[in-house]
Length: 215
Picture (cartoon, one colour):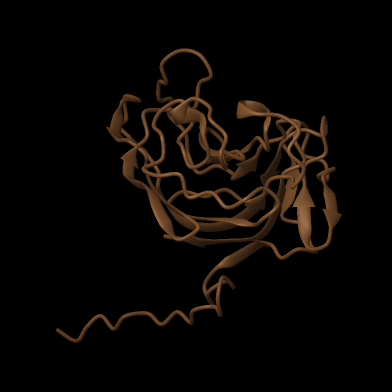
């Protein structure tokens, strides 16, 4: 069949954004982000084309809200290793403000498997550990399907996520069990489109080249 004709999207060069993407952070302009505490301008450090966690400044989130999406995001743990396990380059990417994809320096560093880099935190470990060395840029490419809910608030279909870490598949259409919980079992609550949130876990983790495509 010939109709409908497939829409044209021009790919970016390398990891640059494709033509239909929204650039959330280009290394200079953080105006698409706000403090998750109070909606004020983010207080993270902008330097050398990156946005870096400032301890105690709090999480930052996008002003825009999203449902289904493809997200590209690059992150870097500090080159100087000062701790181990969960204290080593810890941050997180919260899909729809509630489902955490773990950011952690897991290079030759053990922690609980469903808490290392590439895990859906406290739910499932990554398929493999695809970490580069601390101080090097890591790349996540994420395809996310938002949950759907019935009129009575029950789940019609749960959220699902596929993640490539440095080009390696680490989550393959994983069925997210509910919002991230540090202790206890996750349980879905009805929600609409929501922001992308980046976590201040006290470590100076940097982010750059963030873009998103609504699906």
